[in-house]
Image (cartoon, rainbow, N blue to C red; front, top):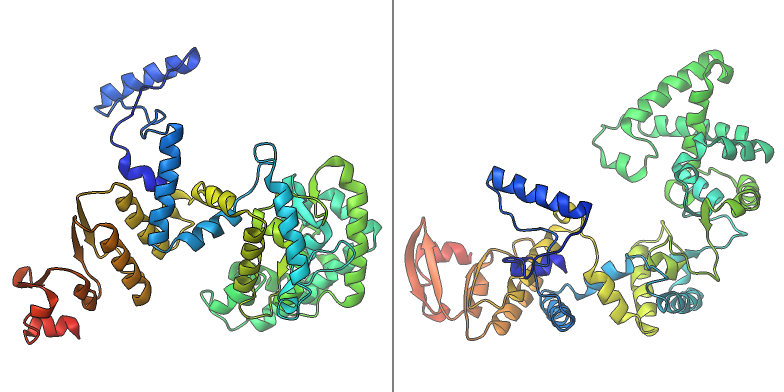
Length: 435
């Protein structure tokens, strides 16, 4: 929403008031601004009229222009990727749990059953890592995050007590050997590393050296810290993704027992928000709460189909308005880092339309879109701006047919100016553009 409103920010609508220490800080900021020749306008003051009525109007207009640029589906996806604050949004957890029930029912159907592995505390899950299987929840304390378990003394003690520590270290050694063998001839920039390797090219070199030392002098020859690396490696294995046959079925059963012991030991300490099918988790996104499982790695397009399944369940229980509101508040990251190039372009067009300008100038703003979507957006923008002036430098010449007047340029010179049907189509420059 801030990106959509950015073009409406000309000056603060009113001055913000400060008291006490905050007032002194603000006075110092103004003095510094004056001394450096910068504006004294307060970035924390309201720059857009956000009274109750204007907020409703801005959101309605924002949703309208986002739909025009085909961002409505993404808006729902942003909402699903957001988290819920139960105290501030007391109605949402109940709706999320209702949507979760619907997903669980649909996953029993033949078309969905192969796509999803739902969470079950008594079963090992092939589409999350060994470490995630042990924790089986969202870590509140970073020391209990799956990637940090190998360094956690309390978790290592649990693995010793359950007889798993040595076996997991040995599993890590087997995984390291497989990684070294599989990726021995691959370049560091190879796509295979990103897709299938559990370790980076740099880490692979370290594991190769450790394996040589073990082969020469035995496991006892390496330091405890290095043995810990093999545990770290074993905890990263995802059966469904890496397909290494590690851990085997017997170890999977033992890991489930270790999970139950993990919950018994740490439940009262609140270091992990454990997965519970009957409870909403504020630590998970709305999508993860509704799905309460993972898409299956080995199924092509499982992620897209599962996302659609979750979205449909959310809409069926009446979450559309809440998801749109959440989507408008989604943090797109520094410079829109969480947005694709196409999404950035479409939001920029929507931002321009929010101003309702009399003159709209577009310099190939749809260059990153496929032709069908580009045509849809150009048509929609022209329809919305009827009666006003739109100047559009086109990336695809054939879209010029949608405009009242077409100017053809060659090396900075205007060589034709007419409706599309009256252009000199035999002119070499235009023929080249149309080709």
